[in-house]
Length: 307
Image (cartoon, rainbow, N blue to C red; front, side):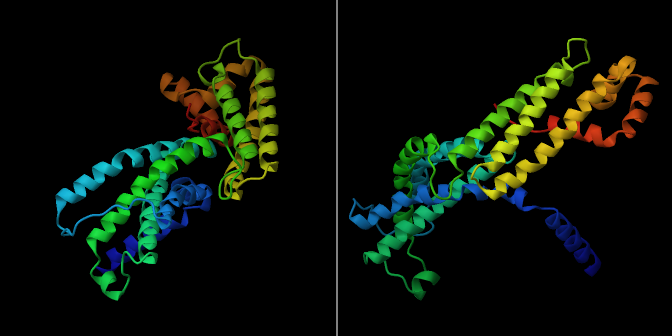
């Protein structure tokens, strides 16, 4: 029994040790924490005497009230999620974990807006905060705070749709210069991935032009790294420059292959399932000798860049 528990704990630690800060940033949206601040900020308007939401005393088990509350909040929450997703898609180089981090950010906005609305009610004396309310919470107060917080998301959506969609340089958000540079890098890399070298070998492949595009992209990455922006974003972008440098050398290797150009391409780009024995074994054996170059191709090909 203890051995099984220890084995599970060891596997858990091994998995956790492989999680980097960059991965946590992609999953949790750490670089966009400002969205939570700006999304929940309108809920503090309850302190200024805006129309309050009043819910009659209800029981915690009242499923009907919960369903109605969720339905009422569905539209502003959905709009907020879409706007958050649109922003985070531009602030991250790939679309990995985009839906997850957008859902987490939206959920944190909802929770923070509810807490702010509830805190405003305590400040105004509308709600009572004590040890008793912690142990036996007032469901009506929680529901009122939740509904007001969700109603405030309408103002949050307006804020997102106006200020944030213009890449304003606001505290807690990536700078507009960095976001612009990131978008340019993404477009250039998409153009490189559209090169025919990724599909098949042919005489129409312009190796010099492909190398020029790659070297230009490396310079754009250096420009982006020089812009003010989240260090987390730069840490995840730096390895791409190294990978592209290796890719540029790889292109020249194929170009200088002479009569072996096509075979060199096969060893780095081709799908082995398209070959029959013994050609498959021959190409696979050659690929084992250039694992690093093949890995570079796979790293670039596996990037999820979105539209």
